[in-house]
Image 1 (cartoon, rainbow, N blue to C red):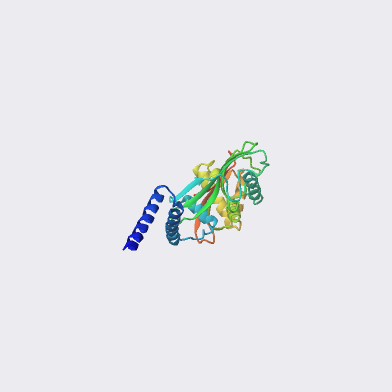
Image 2 (image 1 turned 120 degrees about the vertical axis):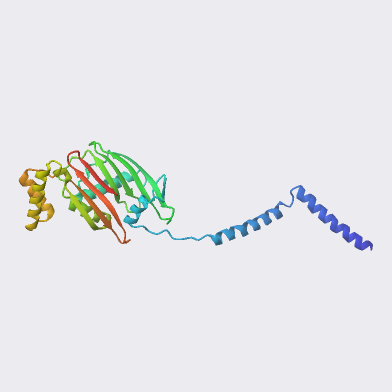
Length: 275
């Protein structure tokens, strides 16, 4: 009987000791071990419910359409993946040179001393969760030309361009401009419509009908529409003051995006903008 009571006293003493020790914070190792085990179970359950998916690589058309979607959000970044504020200027200058070599009437003079005010922006469609980084901003050249543009951080391609103050030696044709910019983007021309509103804007309605009729007759004789217009302009003493092109570009995504290309020699303006 005494042995039984002694055993009970010992058990009670151990329980009281552990309770007192807990009050003084002694068994923190045991408590922390228990917390870590419980936390580990929670984290394991959360990770098991998380689904990781690869981010798809978007085509140029998909990126432009993403920018236009109402479900897209944007966030300003400190730098892009491939370019920073220190390197983006050189890339822009190189791309403008490339567009100029393709015959597009873009400012291609030395931009070394120009001011580049460009910002990288993270664009994400909250519905599809597709995303990409685009640079947007302005360029101020010493020549007085001012440009607004956007550039894809992944490919380094200029996606849009608007400038004023350019002095054009030759503006080319609207058809060539549409084809050249599509090739630059890596897209094909799905459809296009070219108008010479800048030229016909100087003619009254009667003269405009005669002008368009002569172009049509010249084209029917075997000339392309652009060549026919140029020949009529030369006979009439008209300079090619500009053109406007509405063009649809497509790519391997199977989708299309519409662009507006407009050149005016009068005020030295150029717009290459998605619609």
